[in-house]
Length: 348
Ligand code: GLY
Image 1 (cartoon, rainbow, N blue to C red):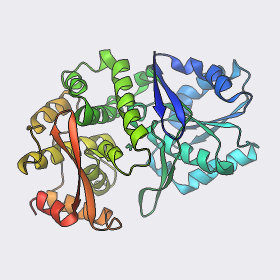
Image 2: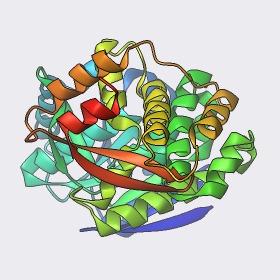
Image 3: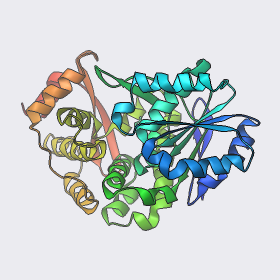
Image 4: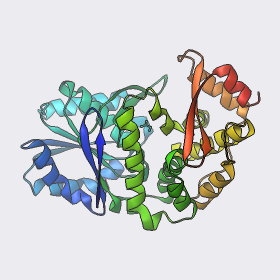
């Protein structure tokens, strides 16, 4: 078991290990005292883990309720958010009580925002159940729901007060969902840690899963401690994501986030090398890492269609865009450039 401290506007522990869900009741008592808990989960995860979570809360005599919503990105909506808020009110939760997000990225984002809004803020605990949520979305406090106009448009920064990453939960993931998390791990390797990158490229992830999750969380923790509100360095975490958002959107979300990030990382690395923005040719090693982990190495969209989708997305940000380019594996830089320059980089 390993514990990583995150030092942002709130200081909290991310506990990583096999079976750490069993600490739930004890930790809630220790951190919050005599409180009531609302577990929030989608129907898939609830059927796998909500009874277990309730059992560990029950062992400490912690009263709890369960709010279940339909799985999938569609539920990351203002409608489901307000259903959650109404549920909390109907069960007489107060601001001293605790909401637990038990699930993947959708659950974490929705619950985190609900916890910030209900009575202007109640306690939040994240229990990520996917690899992607463990290494990325459960840590750092970004929460949001989607609006009709776009993804993540309504949200706040709301740090959790505890994150429990129970690695046993990874056993119930399909290989596709597991790979989505691996794309984010490759991202951490490229932006900050060549040794981590090599380990994943060499197919040694599974046997090192605890150390790998801990390393990713610790990279994220360092970045978030420096730039919690995403005005500078935190942008590094968007390596591969600018194009990925356009890829996801153009595929009408048929291409998963992880697969889109894989394509986005590769495309931007190829562009960076061609335009002499990199010190080393990173794309070949990135291809090896993606192939080793069943991630895609080609994108179904042309550079020109990606550019126009990205331009559309960035209309509100004064004609500029931040792109993250690898100088070498383990070291990336942030370039804030005009959209016209981005267009040139894409050779349009
Ligand atoms: N997932 C990127 C970030 O938390 O900033």
